[in-house]
Length: 342
Image 1 (cartoon, rainbow, N blue to C red):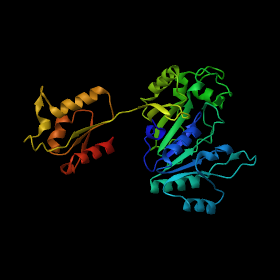
Image 2: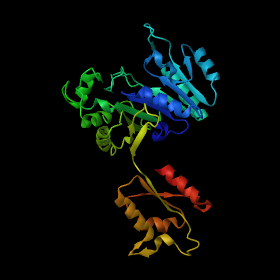
Image 3: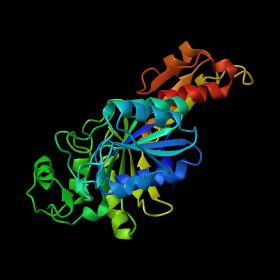
Image 4: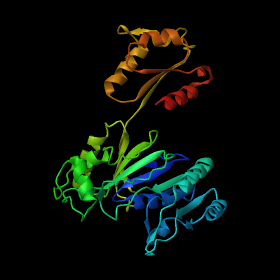
C-alpha cells in the first residue's frame, strides 16, 4: 500500500511529520507517489541536511518575501517542490522556513487541492526521540500529524547512540537512562502529551507510522505497539511498514465507523418497514443492537421518512441519530450525511 493511501490523504491536507526514524523518507515517498498527479509541496520547520534538497524536483530557497512570491508564481497545478530557508553558517544544512511562509503554503495547497508535507522537528538521524521545549513546530493549519518511530529501537539501550535527547525520553517515561526500550515504552511516548502528541492542533488527525517493519518478529512487536495505541481517542490509526520499500505500507490499524441507512420511505412495502416487529423488536432496532455489540465505531443511524416515530423507537439506544432532510433525493444523500457525521 502507498503511504499516501494509508494516511488517507485528501486534497488540501497539510501533514506534519514528527519524531524520528523516517520522517524525511515518508516525505520523499509521498512526493514520488503523488507529484505526477497533484501539487505536492514539502517544507521544513527545522534544519534539513543539504543533500536532502533532492526531496522534490524543484527546490526554492526562501530568504525574502520577494523570493517567496516568485516561487509561488512559478508553481504549476501538478508537480513537486521543496521550500527551505537559506544555508546555515556551516553550509551543511538548509535552514527552516519561517512560520508565516508555512501558513501561506498551507493556504496555497488548500486552494489548489494539493498537499503540504512538513518536517516539523529534527532527530539527527536517530531512531527515537522526545521533543525539546521549542518543538515540534506544527502549523495550526495542519490537518494530519504523523508521529514516526523506527522499530529497530526496540531492545536497544536508552542512550544517545540511538535516541535523540535520551534524558527527555527517560524523564517522560519514568525510566533510567540506559534501560532497554520495550514496546510499552514506544507506545507510551507516542501517546504522551509531551511526546508524540505535543503541539498537535485540536482538529488534526493523528496517524502513527512505525517504520522498518519487515521481519515476522518486527511485525509481532509493531502489532503489540498498535494494540496499545489503537483504542486511544487522539490516535486515529497506526501504520506499519518500511519507507525504503516500493510498497512501503504492510498494515494499517484504525477505527471502523458504521453508517446505518434508515431514511427510506418504504414505498414498495407500503408501511414504515423499519418499525415492523421481528422477534419482538423493530427491524432497525435489531440492526443497531448488532452494530453496538460488534464494538465498531463511531456509529450513526441516518433517518428521514417518518423521522419522529422511527427515532422514538430507538431513542434509548446509545447511537447518534442523524436526520437527512433530503432523503427523497436518493440513497446517496444518506450516505453523504452519514459519512460527514462519522
